[in-house]
Image (tube, rainbow, N blue to C red; front, side, top):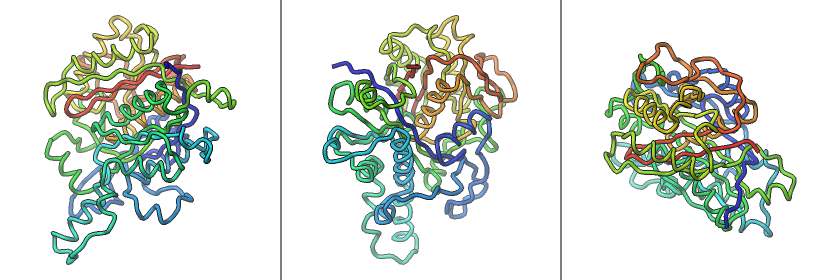
Length: 403
């Protein structure tokens, strides 16, 4: 069964804001949320910067569930509730088995894991850990908590493929609906990486920028981490139209590939293959794509390789394609990254506005695309594509189109 899949609600939290509307406003304005990390317990780590959520929104999530969640899970649950509110949906005994969730995570609940490690092994004096430490830290925790909080009893699982996790989660959700296993899926991703271990793990790879994220700019110095979550309500077209839902966009196609090359170094061929597969799945020509939300991390290697892959796939059209990296505003949110970038694509289609690449200063001949520097551009956006590439060469591309 090949069912059309549409988006009827979106939700999110990141450094730009604590709902999808404020996130989109920040993206559109090219406002960078990157700055000193002030809330996290970083245990002497000096000078850390990131795109941090300064305060969580007020919510009515059950307190007993909140204390059982790591921050990553709570962000996912808050985003999922917002998406369901916008979609005008809820679960009951009659439909819960047709509602599911897929949530992408990169690191997941490392705040809970590190807290237990410090208490037990670094002089904290504890002889036992929090009863729920293990379940807070497991990669599937965010999906479990979304399911429990909303009463979803259909297909529920996590996707964990580092920086491509959210696009893999969206792709998996589309598959559940296309296969007839569900009518509605909550899909997206979440991560909360501002803990000592995760920041040090990225620092030692020497890919973190000391100042800010400048994707595609010749003076770029690396990526900047962010925290955040994004979730979308996906429905079969028939289910959405039968209830008179407002459709924000349609999932046009999915493209997946692996580099099969190196755990930390990317190739051109892997991203190229995924973009081609996405176009084929969508039944689109390269010329049909108006906007491409790039993976665009701000590292030397990623931006050059992504540019080369885009030029291979889009040919002459690459020069008239609008490209941008919203990581320049919300940072690299790892498992949540492509979920936030989904919001950018959906809203670009809704408003016919391409959000800019912020912090851009110097053209790079090896990144010779129209990267929409610093200022948003009004143009018709009928089709938008979102790139996500990860450590280990796992690539996941999603194309969205106007309905």
